[in-house]
Image (cartoon, rainbow, N blue to C red; front, side):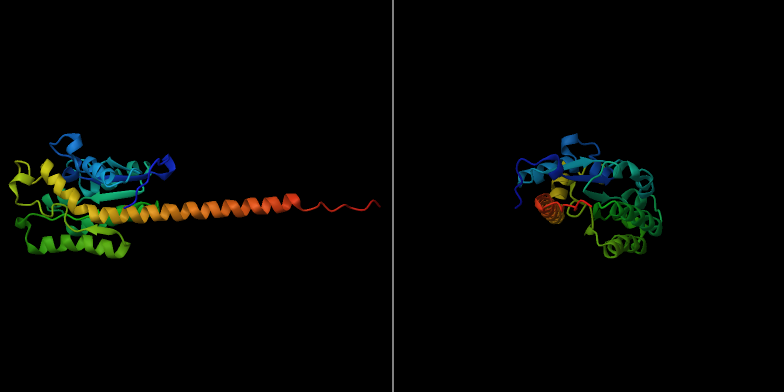
Length: 231
């Protein structure tokens, strides 16, 4: 377990949840939403240098999210939990379009040195086996192509359980969000640990560079200045 006390602003790891109503806290109190509960989980296990922000929007499709991606990037998160595709599937949007939009987002995030955790979605049974197989393949293909962490299905362990869903039978209840957090936590924990190790390595490298620079400056200052003979 990584226990980081008295963390400075430079040490903070910023996680942003960027998704739709499944993670936005639809019909729940703000403190019951997935980002808020994930933040509390991380702090409970000892991460005092991690902050989770909620940028999920109910009704968001992959196209909607792609269109506002600049507003996410400008906040400079370290890690983005990308949970999208549910509303696309609800509308029967082609998996090829979903794939293209997700790949574009992943590429732009990675270009800005942001780590991506991709969370998969599934369509309803009425869409048919072929559609759902293609949709599921979208996420696994992206994870392989772009080396991102993948959590295959956002509602794993929640679907069909009345107490874990709201009355609509689609969105997670507060108890359902608890299950989401616990199920996803091992993957997120691994990503946070990797980011922390990367930050520590970069800090050590910077410190070594500064020490070497200071040593060189000291040598130059101590070296005698050659005296030019008077002609």
